[in-house]
Structures are given as C-alpha cells and as structure tokens.
Length: 67
Image 1 (cartoon, rainbow, N blue to C red):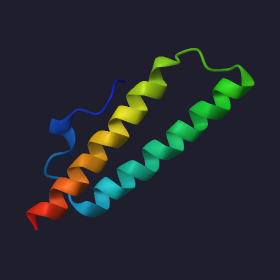
Image 2: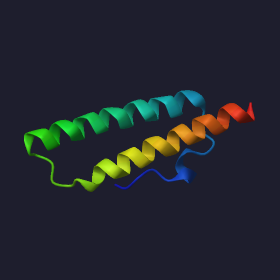
Image 3: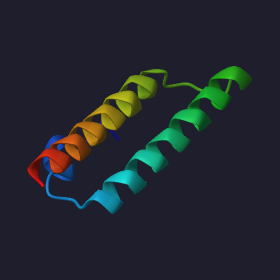
C-alpha cells in the first residue's frame, strides 16, 4: 500500500477527510512504536504516511477556500 493519491481524496467531504487524517496519524504512531520495539521492517512507510497526511490536509485547505 503506497501513499494516498490525490484522485482518491478529491471531492470527499470535510468529515471524511478529517477521519482520514485521524486514521493516518494513528498509523504513524503505530509505526513509531513498531520501530522502537524493533518490529518494523518497512521504514519507507513513514514517508508514505506523512505524504498522505500532507495531501489530505492540502485537500482540506482547498475545500475551505472553495466555500
């Protein structure tokens, strides 16, 4: 599973975007715990989750400017 693409989040409403951010932040926290305990094998997932969070926030901001 890669980073969320913009075409997957464009057109979603504010509530679902906020829920996505919450879920992604929870995943990032879990990745940090896995890394600390030595269970994490795929460290590139950190970058993918951070990019997905940024894209979701960008769409939220874009929705606010649209109205």
